[in-house]
Image (cartoon, rainbow, N blue to C red; front, top):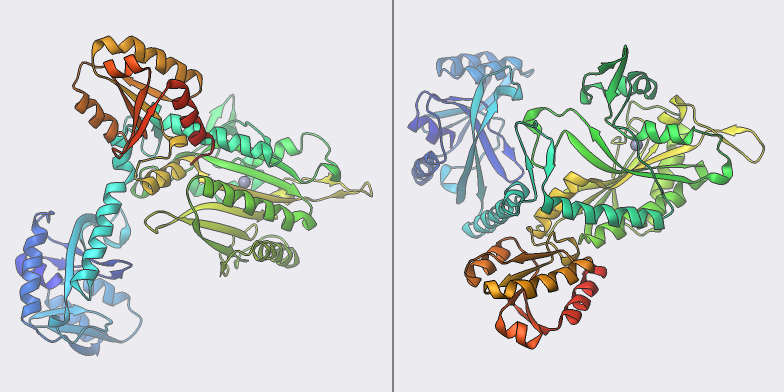
Length: 558
Ligand code: ZN
């Protein structure tokens, strides 16, 4: 590809071009602004090079010779890379009149390339720094056979179709607005309806699981974040403090210190442990604008957070409960495949080695007890304690980090939290941070892509759409609508002056699970014909039957 680009645009300088998970890219400094329309031209040139079946020839030379070679070629980026290399011997590959710096290995000849496709063009700063020149990056992919390539291209097409940013707009679920600020999510009524269902479910299930629900402020005095250590180890993710009446305050990046403050609001006895505090807590973290991505990476988000205060000998039991709870929640939302990781002590850590061993052992034992397959991520624990991460797999098999369970030796120590034991002495509790969904924003993004926007009935913003054929059917439809609303069903009545086929199309585009058409026949028979969003006919029902039918599917979250 680099050779083809250089033939088409001879002034191009080559930066770096590595292989990545699903293909490759090359960063180029080219005075021609490469667009999507140029890709077929580049592909055509590549095919010519492939057809010529030229061998790739490896040459080894000293670094000095290589610097001279690439300087003569005008490849200043390669010279910069070479100058930073430690080894004195480097390899280059030649093919025809094209030379590139490369460690290798390579195919024997260009003729070995069988199936490839250039995918997209993007901007990329040299060495990823905004201070450097913006280069042009071309992404491509290659496979051994045309069939394998096609399977991958179909997958990419499906990924594009399910992109939550695109569906968020099409289904009017949420938006991000430059006037409001990047990474700050606006939940539109239809998205908010789904969030309310998720939140209600979350709150009810936490109550059943023995959690107490909290609400805490969005900011706190800067001093609090000094005490917790956030200012030492988390500063780059926090916003600048603001001054109120001569004191500095900070918008919260985490909920933990507030939950600790409530724990400390009075003397705690061993009888109260384990104490489980849960909050849908909105936090704000600084992320560089370049890494923000739809709902998946944002600056303000609501964690489904909880903190469990317990004794050391209660860790395993609590982790077991959290694991059960997590899997139940994930399953309810339609995720049945996941990967589990146990992260152990990193090089830099707080607390005693013995404590780490015990906590890691407890986490591992809980995983074994549950019969969960897991992988160990050595040294990937947080500095304050070991953790379990659960990554769900969506309907396309893609992995998403959602749930996390983390043991914390740091905050209990720093914020000096205690409970009174049976012997009337004070002891330090263990603190477990956990989130099941991670954040509502991110989880919503994953849900949209998982279902491709066709949510199950219980989550759908509108559960049934009533479509009138003519003006004279409006009053009758309104009566049915009102009776369904009273039953807690989310109904939309479309009595616009449009053709019925157009109304069906509108509801289908919005992926409304059920729709019913109201006309003369329906009014006469006092029965409604229900159809699914895929066009399938469900049958004729009375309003009472329809209510029972919908409620059954909603309550069972099918
Ligand atoms: Zn926490």
